[in-house]
Amino acid sequence: MSFIQINNLTKKHTNRRGSKRSPADVAAPGEMITVLDDINLEFEEGEMVCILGPSGCGKSTLLRIIAGFDTDYDGEIVIEGEKVESASSEHIFVFQQNGLLPWMSVWDNVELGLRNVEDVEKKNEQIQEYIDLVELNGFEYNLPAELSGGMQRRAELARALAVKPDILYLDEPFTGLDYFTHLKIREEVVNIHEYIGKTMIMVTHFIEDALVMADRIVILSEMPTSVKMTRTLDFPRPRNINTNKEMGDLRDEIFLMLGVSYVA
Amino acid sequence: MDRVNFKKSDGSTGFEFKAMILSRSFWLPIFSAFLAILIWEIIALYSNMGEHVFPGPVAVLSAFDELFSNGALIKHSVASLYRVTVGFYLAALLGIPLGIILGLNRTLSEMVDPIVQFLRPISPLAWIPLAMLWLGIGDKPAIFLIFLSSFFSLIMATTVAVKSINPIYFQVAANFNFSRLELLTKVIVPAITPDVITALRLTVAVAWLVVVAAEMIAVQSGLGYLILDSRNALRMDFVMVGMIVIGWIGLSLDLIMQKFSRLKWTAYS
Image 1 (cartoon, rainbow over the protein chains, first blue to last red):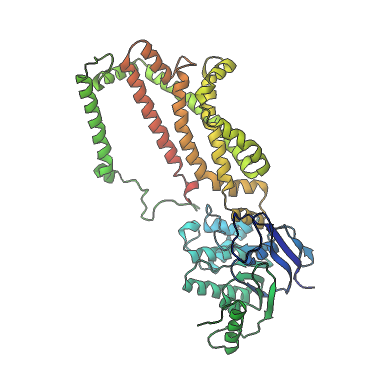
Image 2 (image 1 turned 45 degrees about the vertical axis):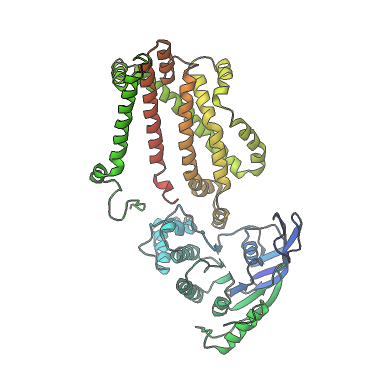
């Protein structure tokens, strides 16, 4: 049995829009829309999985369901043999944006996952360790709003990692970052994965990120979303999409699959 | 160890006395106030209405001195402030928690919201007959009217503030296994504080408007009573003193609330 199992996951919700969203959108206002249509997936422990798909396809919805934030669906999510019924502090979610509590300093945010540690000295040591890990020393007592987007993302990573979670969920963690910061944070996530070896599931619409980072990629279709393809990647690391011909070909193949025929 | 430091990076607290004395924004209001008083004096002198009907600033100043030195002004101001404080605190103490509950419970808010919406636009002054009948004469009906003036607005503002909390923060709370108490103290209260303080600032102004009106009817003290009593004695200079003090206190209340809104728990917004 696999570490994470997604069995026959189907998610529907009522169309709350006042008018039709697009000509392809078959549901009228008030009708049920199928967001996720019979998804079956299995992930192994320690795997870095990237879930790719066109925007609005329900990637984030899928991740939220796996994380236990949303329990209104058919089918089941089983992690380590147990059915997921609510969010757990052993599986930490890194949000696309605004995941830090804005009224708490970086220090207090990182402390959230460690607040039940009795030994204060040990706790403070751990908090400092993870703040140092993401190179935010000197910004411990700053509020999130005083940090740049990249620093906020790093602070959230520190908060997530400090818990020593079994699984890390990353919901488009590079959204809203400039390209350079994007690459820096990507590198950091890859390093953290190599270093800690935790299971990570990341949702993204950047195909190249998925190819560089993932042990396995899952490609989703447009709504109603189903799994179009899964592929295990065993390219040697560090990966470079520009020099590895095989990776380049795979990228073009995925682009084609998602409906982009010409890639510069 | 002091982890929270909201001073600016240059070490100043943002308040420089010397710069203030020299600044335009300090002198212009003082200048315009003098101008207004001057115009008031000129109109009073040439209006042919006589000192008893339209007293000028000099007459009002001497009336102020009279009321201040015989203690009446302090007594009435304290009486008014006492009623506003009690009524306003009661409204905040009941209204804010109730607003939080309504903001979290959709069924309850769908039930109670229409009632709040219906009662809110009824002027507290319309309650005067009932308030006097139910609570008699004295502080009680006045405090009740102040309470009404703030209560419904505070419920509504708090409910809206809770409902507009970014759902991500609740997911973070779920992810880190927050207890109900932690959810309240670490997420809900800090998230709504800026909005609630703004609401308090608006409602204290309304409460202050209402106290004066309430005192003209139900009680024998307070600035409202001072004005009414002075009108009966045909002392328009006392009436004007009452009005001016009401203005001052209203302004001070607003300044105090502004200070509140700059406290550290709102520094993030």
